[in-house]
Image (tube, rainbow, N blue to C red; front, top):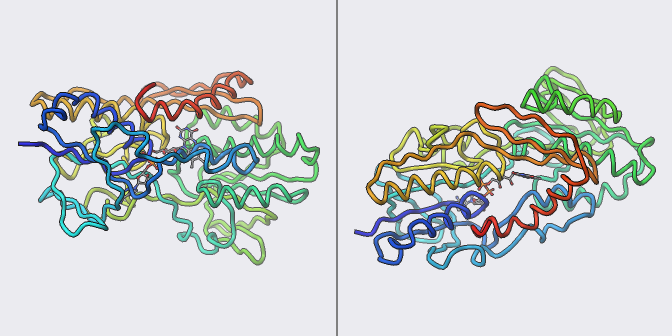
Length: 381
Ligand SMILES: Cc1cc2nc3c(=O)[nH]c(=O)nc-3n(C[C@H](O)[C@H](O)[C@H](O)COP(=O)(O)OP(=O)(O)OC[C@H]3O[C@@H](n4cnc5c(N)ncnc54)[C@H](O)[C@@H]3O)c2cc1C
């Protein structure tokens, strides 16, 4: 009997996993013992880290797009469609464009994060973000013509994609205006909903003095509750109001609705065992990347490392062997500290991060990785 492995989501995690499985299960796929499908709701694979550079005119959104069909192994059966329902009892998935449900033996959800700016009144009309292609492009236009006034960078929702990206944006904005001789006319305010500037204590303690040194005003414990686009203000739940001339937000994030509808978790995040990545509420279902509630950051590096674990586990199960691979929380992040310097952290569930001294070399390493990413997604690095 042919076993069907169905991967939903052709972003970083799903693409790396599908290629990993095509490699590991080469013999079974060639013999027709396994059928490997990948479903994505876009013909393109999107590499989001590029968006950080778009507002500063350093990259175009298209630099982060490639046809998914060019990135995956020929043995993978690619469907451009949207999954609209999951029945974990019947082990079936429904699709937007297909009338019949499809059965699976192993299901992997790698459906990423979804922005939910509508959860904050006024935010849809009142702010920019660089967490989408259109947002990053619109922000570039406004940033280019901004010569004086207050820019507020507000982290609204936690968890959000790339926990380091708000710090990076703050440091880059500061440097970008300095390079252009405008920094004295531009006030920068950074708000965080928690009592420090980053969810991770070590990163927060490293970043905070650097923000103070650069005259970035920090408001911690600012739980943004509403934006008034006419008055150009952002208000917190306890009534504190901050005026802005340009608001850049990290909007609230969710997973996809159907995770909750299928009883797999809340707010679209799948409850999983943080080491095996198996869904807690259903057998033969894995989740990885942003959508897996492991406590690890919502970062591409996490999705990448988890893909290797899920790949090994499914390959073992298909072969009737006990799966032994586990995810240890490994995370690797570059942190831009300006337009020409970056730091770097590596950590896991047991070992906290310790950011290294920023350097131009690390900045170039980050840019080089962004180019090499396409080989990583293809499974060649
Ligand atoms: C500005 C920015 C900068 C970043 N910088 C970094 C960085 O420097 N380093 C880093 O490690 N991470 C970074 N990240 C985070 C990183 O991009 C994400 O964590 C990573 O993409 C998560 O991978 P994923 O596979 O879980 O989800 P994604 O890559 O988002 O892929 C999910 C895929 O699932 C598809 N999908 C969703 N629902 C369905 C459905 N129902 N049916 C079919 N398909 C569906 C989506 O279209 C998408 O293709 C950054 C993110 C942003 C926004």
